[in-house]
Image (cartoon, rainbow, N blue to C red; front, side, top):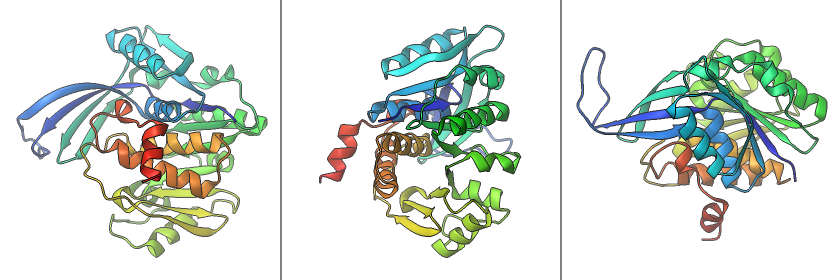
Length: 304
């Protein structure tokens, strides 16, 4: 069994609950405010750790109160924080989230996350059965450095290119599994996609990325499940009907769960189905990192 090594953002999510999202220039009175540990890197690491994988997180936090709270929370989830650096010159990453009718809008202020660089990943040991995971909430040179080290070690790599931004497509050469949602797929493929588009349109967009045949491309589709290209063939993962409370972190849950399953040596179809169930559990409760399910919770759904 391999380890999961996640290089990514660590944020405190400041979540305001409201009846609806405000329009431009409009003020809406909210119902309550909550503080939840989050950040795509932290979310994915917590998901993998709670699902049984030995997991290390690479990143930075400030020396402020948020940084101390984030460290305490992540440590309690059995995430290895040996490669998380305190950064006195910057505040901890913060995400300001408005949640209304289970949909969210998010403004991320990177803070210490913006200082993560190649040196942060240089000391992280990687082995052949490990899974290296990253996203786009930290500077791209750090992502590139992690994947180059993983490639040298023979470890598998998972990229979640979110939030989407311009990047050197050569990075995809070091990616084994690309996980993204339909909005991100549309932006990378240069086509307009909608959440009701059929599978053939999504597959056309996935193929237009021109990933090598041995690479896996997976599009998460929320309540519709997921769609993957595996060795050029479409793999359909059916959705689950649940009542969503908070979709923040659902994609991160999927990525972390997928990484944990692959680190355990499970087949890609089984890993994707497991990840889809984990994400469906995640959306039924509040918060990002705190909503990640345990392996027992996922297995309880599988055995029903």
